[in-house]
Image (cartoon, rainbow, N blue to C red; front, side, top):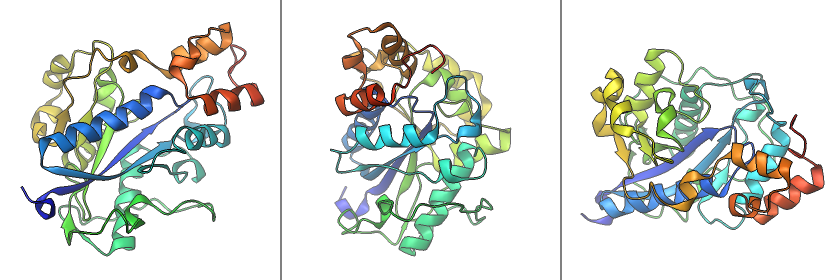
Length: 277
């Protein structure tokens, strides 16, 4: 398959990132590596979208800290960026809303025609910071051979490439994202059917059982890409929960879980040092 015939992909991951770990970054890298190995895709960028403060998860630190830690974690990456849109809304957003926002923004920025979905997102853009980096699909270095039409991986396919949802744990796959935010069945249909998912399984998740348990997942198996060769990698057992516990107990293994700039920021701000977060 020629380069121009391949589907351009943007990987998007929603989650708490409380804090962001080496496992999260590894997930992006493995998803990109797997997609490239198929010979059918070109990953042009990755987006990390931390959840809004009002999500209400116990121990969730303010988004200003989570955004900063995410930015520190990817500061050396030339393809993964942190997007604050979700954090700057008036309230918590579903994964579906976040995907639709990026789909619609990509369409406005690139002028591309998205292939399947014609209904625009009704989610308002509120409080977008003025000094943020441009979206990955606005990076013209990545779009030298920009196609006229593409798919956001799966079916909310819209234009410049497929937008894939990279997810850290198949055990929570029924809810599509790290925070179990899938929402109503019709939203699950949109996420899996219109956008698609790349799954990087974590510590022994029974992906086959979960796939068979959901009629929606079975219906859209062609839009679900499973990275099958990495379950036993050391990063597959890393989690934000383990990282917080290591910080609270002064466990030196925290250096195996978090990037050093993130650790330095946590120590500076005294985040997670007590059990209350």
